[in-house]
Image 1 (tube, one colour):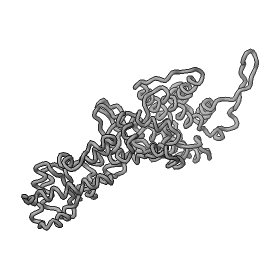
Image 2 (spheres, one colour; image 1 turned 135 degrees about the horizontal axis):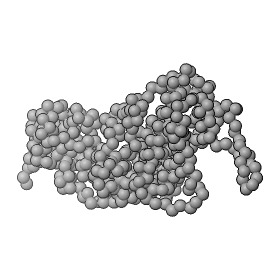
Image 3 (cartoon, rainbow, N blue to C red; image 1 turned 30 degrees about the vertical axis):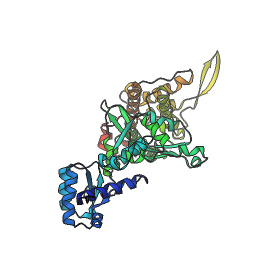
Image 4 (cartoon, rainbow, N blue to C red; image 1 turned 90 degrees about the vertical axis):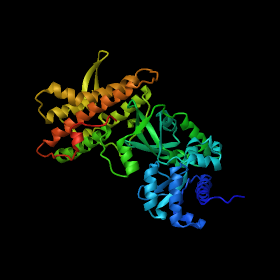
Length: 427
């Protein structure tokens, strides 16, 4: 029997180590210094690793490129760059992985067909490679009260709620979580959800196949802010409309407390967004109406009416069916009266259009479906309608904030220039 070459022994050691880790869902590479156990010298190992990289049989990761070389987090460097680093770096700082053709010689990847994302990692793909999905993939969890979805402006996470975890034998099927998902855009700039392979691979077979069925058909890219937070690990400048609205509400409340001793809004938008305010929902009428209701909760329903002085009437007499009826004055009417009492506008009609009409539009959109039965429908135009409504609300709130900042007892709020100038992301 022909004795295997030293290069073949190195390749076998690299492939065997990775294949053995597949069953544990670890997908680990072997550090180059462990190849010394093959009774080979460091001076012999380096050129053989370079040759195996050049021939496309292995890839190497380096701690200078990614601190944790034991898992392949990022796509492989070019073969030229790998060969350069192999000649320079300490063997402890290099990890080696077989490429897919070599993996297939030692492992039947088709056994993982029912776990397509586990299969991709087992085939040597990087763990932070992402797959893009239609938002419909999230809707199953959004509409199931057993799941907890936490939304932020550029990402989110989901998991089964603690009280439903491991609830029964049948419940194992849904004991799943995705530590993080993010916002991306396809080549039409249409929003999609993106999820890293490392998190998709933790799902069981039923849920992997479910997500597979909603893969986006068009190529997509990750939004800058999610890339900065999840890949670079840096703080990003939040420039979403929802964030800008939140900052305006906070600034308005700060100034109202300074001027009047009370807040105008009872609550602000929480760090973790209500699902209805998130961009991560499909553009359907049902979802748009959910959004409108949630937005109204944060605006006119959120007014702290105790800030309005007693001189502003809370009720009025109206004639209903030939009878005089005392009715409560709506919160938006109270707000409008208060605003025009505390500030003299050069153009009251323009001020009403800019500062009051957006609140009324939200309320009108909310009330309309309450009085009629409407069929759900899918229309990408709902995204544009959502953006336009948020932009109007933002400008109304920013306008109010600037009025309060100019009050003798008011003060300037530290808003980023992008917010002051309205250069914001449309979600």
